[in-house]
Length: 150
Image 1 (cartoon, rainbow, N blue to C red):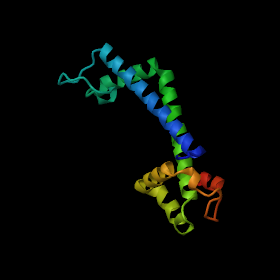
Image 2: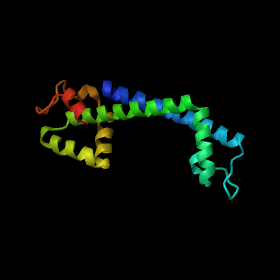
Image 3: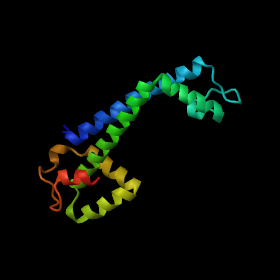
Image 4: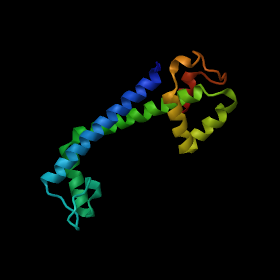
């Protein structure tokens, strides 16, 4: 059975929260669009307010929606921020368990290469924490120090 550590758990919880809040926002946005009978010039219903093909009408609707659901919009921003921090800590954890000979190269690549960042994130998320030694194999920085790097 796979064992998760605090970085993996924090990431899972933050991602789940973002998904729930995004779904709720999407639901409220669809209700808003339906209740106001918003349609594009071609008669289609936009999937989101931002997909409305009238820029001036979008601006007004977006402002109105944001004020109607200000608390939800605020919670969405907070959840997104928490998720980004959890993602950064999980990536730092992934780097901390990388072999010493590739640590510096990965650390540099993570900052500039999205694919490498996603790969480290995925590997760090899926690793069985019970198989990782308690101390990082790389001697250049502790896990706490590396968490601050990302």
